[in-house]
Length: 77
Image 1 (cartoon, one colour):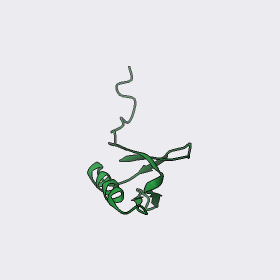
Image 2 (image 1 turned 30 degrees about the horizontal axis):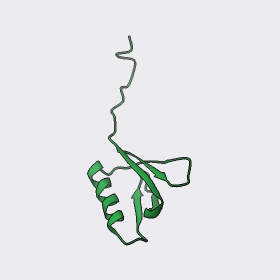
Image 3 (image 1 turned 135 degrees about the vertical axis):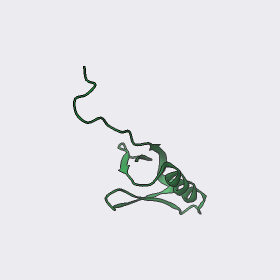
């Protein structure tokens, strides 16, 4: 699953591939937002790296489902 995180005052978004479901990512975001002002949103990517963003710096979080990509040349006519 691909998760895009926009950070305030940063021109590039963070793009993370994670093994979590969309519901799990949303739950992590809700928990981070419900925490005290010093809360952080943390997520681990598919390679085991952990990304931590202060909640006060979050601009947006886009949760997308993985698309199955076709393999080969079938259907290209």
